[in-house]
Image (tube, rainbow, N blue to C red; front, top):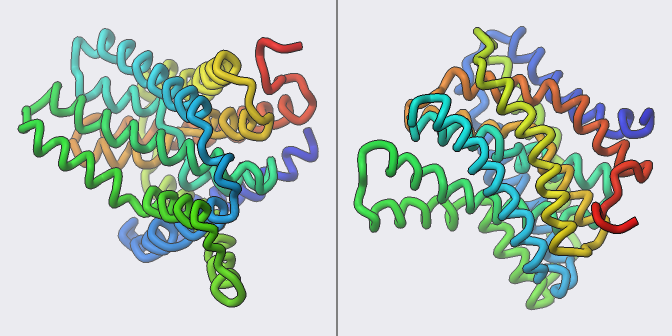
Length: 320
């Protein structure tokens, strides 16, 4: 466990550093704008492209893996939504945010850096695939459920909104371009490769620091009772369901299974707070969910990685 703690502590340390900086430095959250632009539009897309463009094409066509992980995430959303729907008195918008709180992990900012560091470069491909399809799922479910629960909008307008969110997202564009480069055998060489690698190396530190600052600027005001449901759904049930789904659909490469379990165990994405703000629903409590799951995940992610490293958590639940 000491090795695992030493491996992932720098990543959570960067979040803590950003949190402290956000509390000490008297700057508004808008001061992060250009750093977020660098992370979202430049550094992380460069990382995804570098990982995918150098991957053998046959590894990118794992339909069973994609279906299993995406379906597992949808099941978690449905469970979280159903519990919140009953508890909130059939409030669909609020239940949607709570469902996302349990299913939408921080697979963009935290996922690539931690997965590649803990599991090696081979983890980059499953991470990119899960990111692409899980985000597509969330980009569809959020506007769809908000439209059902609130002011209805024409189907064509909603479909256009979903299409634009999916296919203009820089991470997904980078994934598509990276897969295309792998298929065509195009691999950047020399200075261009070094430039892209430099950007890719900057992705995790900048993303995690920015995440810490963002959390610091959204202080915890109160603990909503829903937290006692959402936290175990996100940090325990989500990786458990992914593990069982991959076991039923597999077997798969152990690194791919470990990558999927790691991503499922990550805390709630800051995008859940952004979506809550966009629809003006459950905003303060969404911020609390992001903060609390991030803090608790220091322990749960460490335990999961230790279990995977020692064999206590086998990569296939039904084989001995």
